[in-house]
Length: 233
Ligand code: BV8
Image (tube, rainbow, N blue to C red; front, side, top):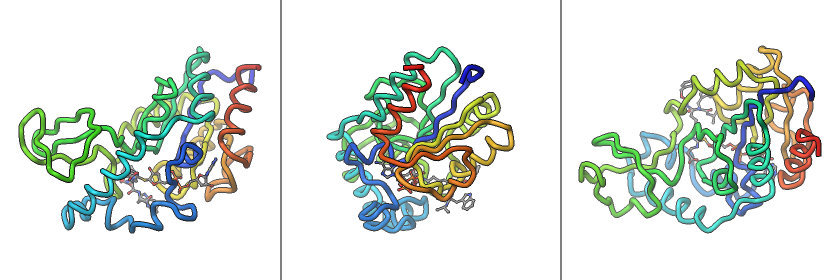
């Protein structure tokens, strides 16, 4: 641990599961209720915008009623106490990391609580529905979409993520199945750059073989334990 200064943490739906937010692939998960190609692609939005906007309105409303859990709180504690480099790269579009108090957070797949105007490119905080085609506060056009990265779209801030991976001494993956790229490829890139890698997940994931160490169990147990180790608790 002594020579470890820079940490990159990747989080997925599993870290928010114990806050009551559906994961994607687990039993009863989002992708069991909806087909990806019907709700999370630009083509789907073109084809049936009502179906897509209703899907995101439902999720945007749901997450505002959920609370951060002990795993989010532990990462916020680490963020506040760690004077080395730290970046929490989340695939999640919920705001539970920030509501737990973390600040060094990057949403590579966007966020539910932002609207993006496809007419004037405005992006702004948005907590209400979009199905009724509200006017853009900037240009007045009725052309808002969720500010999330759909399949086939380029994830956000990839350069900043790769720059942090290049500087990292430790890469930790929490609550992700390793099914979606480019996020699922970060562990391999980290290994190629001789970065130590640790997985904290309920069960083995599609990328488990790439990790130096894998610990299996619920995030609300594994993450506070690991943070205490790092902070020398
Ligand atoms: C792109 C936002 C070009 C919207 C999301 C290479 C190979 C194959 C395919 C591709 C490839 N490269 C690109 C692709 C295509 C595609 C892709 O990966 N397809 C997959 C399905 C094969 N990727 C893309 O289209 C990406 N864009 O490639 O652009 C490009 C590429 C590179 C560089 C430049 C450009 C865009 C993908 C982003 C799509 N948007 N979300 C929304 O949320 O609605 S993805 C969405 O699904 C999430 O953000 C997340 O990324 C993913 C879900 O995965 P997880 O978060 O891991 O959740 P999951 O349910 O799967 O697993 C939960 C895990 O938690 C499980 O392991 C479980 O055991 C664990 N768990 C459960 N409970 C707990 C727990 N762990 C701990 N405690 C618990 N209590």
